Length: 204
Image 1: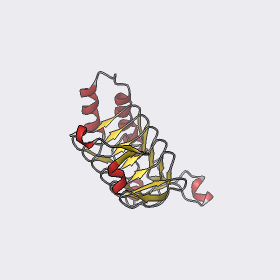
Image 2: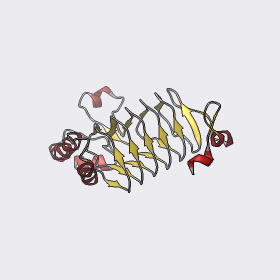
Image 3: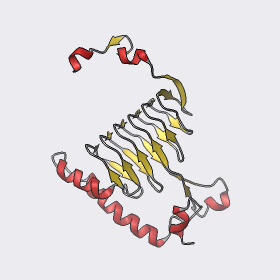
């Protein structure tokens, strides 16, 4: 098997392979161009994102700087995904993001991992596992999502969390390691912050 075939099969492989590095460099050049855009160049940013990402729905926005090992090649956004500053996608394997997802600043999503065996690590070998994020998820500032994790729809991940295992839908989860704090319920439809009520009548 080639190193690319090993990579795509989820096996341990050598990411320093010349063929892989050549493609990565090409894609990182495009990412550099995106990060160098001016705030007024919204149309250019959208064009570049469509060229960079594996797939992208309607109404998506990424605030530069954006970091991605493969320039976003393996990042798949649904509709209306918003990312604040410094989203890092270690996208050696696919990252699937649903609709209406929000990323606060300084979020890291990693798909690449390294074996525990020092004999393999000293040769810089790695393997990859995809990450999936469901619809309408909010990821708080400074969160780290590790390889192989799935986060269910509507869930909120609190700031500073390290998500090391799957998180179910419709919960608030926080911590290191990230754990479910509570379910999202009726009270969340009445209050937006502590005891401050949502003025639904003025939002329509």
